[in-house]
Image (cartoon, rainbow, N blue to C red; front, side, top):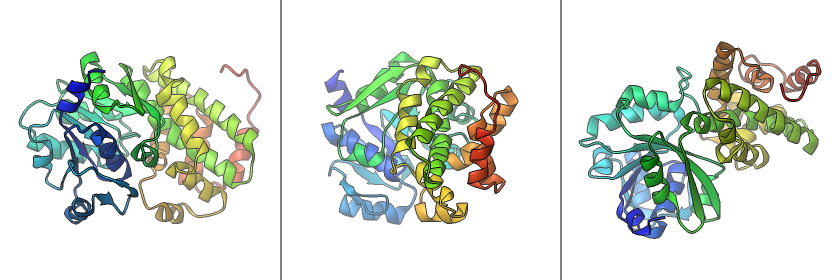
Length: 339
């Protein structure tokens, strides 16, 4: 990696939740110019005063040279790269606000995972609608929890962009001693991997909440990966992407560790807690919930079978008892594993 270039490029992280804060902490480690924007002025003032995000990531400390602001125009003025880390439901509105203050072309990338809740669009489709197809864009994904990235624990992720040069620039800015960034051009595959795994993590949480064992969890992960690959290849993704960091890697992470909000939501459902109560207890966006609804629609439109995703959807939106959802999966006819 070109270390001098990485340090010289200013990056603005938009979104001051746990993930945006963790990314800003990580990006600032090599001394590179880093900005962090959030829309809540009071929250950003507190963060600026303490250098800690007490609400979302209290154990992580922001370096003093990170510029913290609630002024979007100031955050992106004369910056070299922009990185969105907002929930999927805020993605379009953030891009619209961004387009109103940008005064020069800047590559826009995002670490947001999921589909647009209202439309089911992949996020690169939303970006093209709002920013125009000529804007350079990229997506960042992979098996990464915010707390571990902020703590500086070793990890790897993927940066995908239509332009190899944009992918390299973003990867160079993210990459340092403990965080390895890989590049690729399969934007659809990276986005779908990051969306589908959240729904499957809810399924894994439900199974564990019901008291099922490691065998069940392993089967859900494996058959869930088959669903991810079926839908992904139908929509233009590459299989190798979906068995890589942004697909299988992120799927294993979120299905097996309670740092995953989606897994925790599933655990609560499996233990009998109503969905709204579970979401209130978690207190942050659980992307798998709206994504399940939109994934089912896209799978049906494409004529793709996604039985685990379908049962998660029914538990979330049709009040199906989680135990009966598992029974429905087990009652399916035997079939060859490769279908």
